[in-house]
Length: 119
Image 1 (tube, one colour):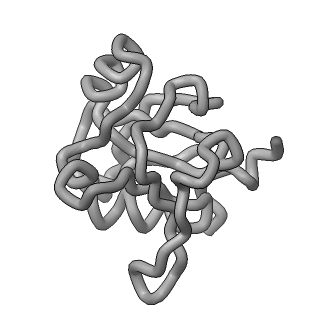
Image 2 (cartoon, rainbow, N blue to C red; image 1 turned 120 degrees about the vertical axis):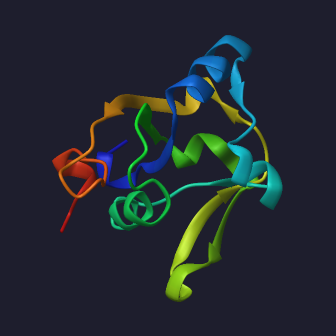
């Protein structure tokens, strides 16, 4: 699968460590409250980092193969009417094809690898 087709999840290293031990990610607190796991596309992930994770340390960026998630993955309108991927099931750890820790830039926003930062 090409990297352009991946979807992304930003979450704490602690939640990811727990998910790996369990075999799936149930979600971050916001996911559990909303009833689905929030993801972003490569074009959306920088704004997601800036809006929801500014100033947070100890984060990891997961790249996920959307095709491995089946019908539980829905594309639904959100910010500005943009379609966002939402998973209505736990995320199996085997669907995660990349993971990397995120550092903060001087503006407090996570520094994203070039492939996930098209701007």
